[in-house]
Picture 1 (cartoon, one colour):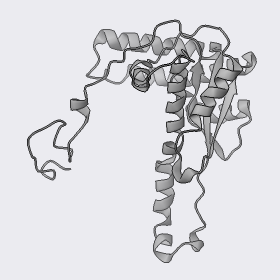
Picture 2: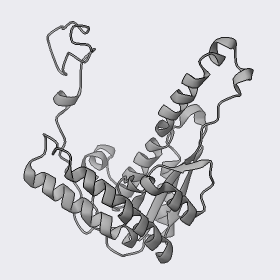
Picture 3: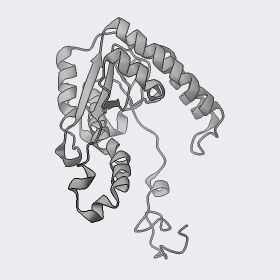
Length: 240
């Protein structure tokens, strides 16, 4: 493992989609998984699980499902506006990189699938009356926050891969045909997948990352007060 500072990893872990066919050592993958399980989870439930696919036939099956799902993604990208912060050249490069992965996902030496069991609430009648009355809202709440218990682990995977000189990224196109993915991998009905992450040694260099500046995406105390701002504004004035 390369000694790399935390902020260096965060600032240079580019989404590199072109991977070499070289195998990733078992001990490296184990270390990456050990980093994943250091992440927080709601109620410390640790209801995550991780499927690592190295078998060529299994990877090919997942690649075919991903390719089919990516046809839908391609149509959506083609009919939506280019993000304002990207130039035409940057957007074309982004789309070219994405379409390469759509065609070559199954060739990555490792495909990692982070999974998590469905949340389980106590039975309605075991709860106080005031909570029973809003039980449906609690179900919706549990669904809304599910990602908070798996995506921190996914981010740890990204950073650990960066430390080992491995490329990876979060992709989710496969969820459009998740039942087929679960059938290939034998994943139980009460477990969902949250990403399909290709892992391998990159055929390009890491970092630096280009992002919109903090001043464009952060606010001080209320939405109408951009960060940083020295002007005190009425937070309710522009609320909708």
